Length: 368
Image 1 (cartoon, rainbow, N blue to C red):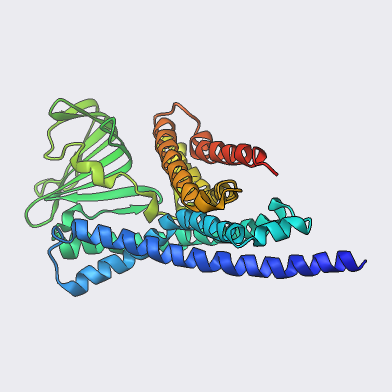
Image 2: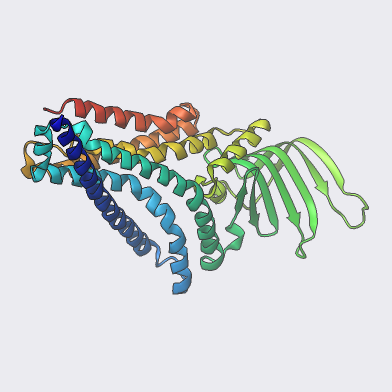
């Protein structure tokens, strides 16, 4: 009875101590990684962003939520390595093992806290990142680059893009294929009076022109009381814009919440439009939030070693290597998913599943 009570006390004290150490290292790692990311980004781009200091500071202020979101998984990884490695170096881990406490039980508070961090990370990506990114883009194109025509807005059922005296309304756009679906082009005169309207179910870039399919041309002339509309099955037009110039209107999932992206996909599916790339982005929002848990799990087997003299440096090096592998898998998975080679759910979750399986493999190989 007394031994059971003693073990409960040890668990309670150890849990509080491990949780405290983990949170301390997590916050320190998150601060360092986010600061380094911000500094490198500023040094790389500051010479291109010609604006007053107040505008630049505001621009980077709105960038911070996304930076914190991106650096959270790496911070969870490093916090796990620091916490368990220090327990190992100070022989506290051996003392816990001697008391009958397993490595799984030692890591339990770390994984529980990481799960909470993963939920918070998803909240940040869904509630803070989209509005901050939209404001960041507005400052970039309107206040810094002075190219307001390149600033676009994305809603749940349309993309608006302005160029000179034209305004494009596009339901979906695939820059790799040079393909637009659900296209409407508004032509204006120098006084911004609507003079022509072209609609097309599909527009594909071929050679130096755009080939439109299944649409209408509507002319608004002052001498006519009513607009004149002429349907067409195929029509070729010349525009100043090329697919590369439309690259910016490819939907950045950072500017849409999960609910907005879900509605966007549903409405475009109802219109029989291609939504594969957006489905991959949708599932990717959930899978990336889970990365923090995967990274923490991955750090456990490389934080424990009988050879404590070099275990910390080796663990950091090995885990950073696996982080690189993970991002490579993410890039490959998203690419295969966007091209329809893999189902969207599999494309988004396969890297997490692979790395989690690898972590379990290394845990099982640990010598007790």
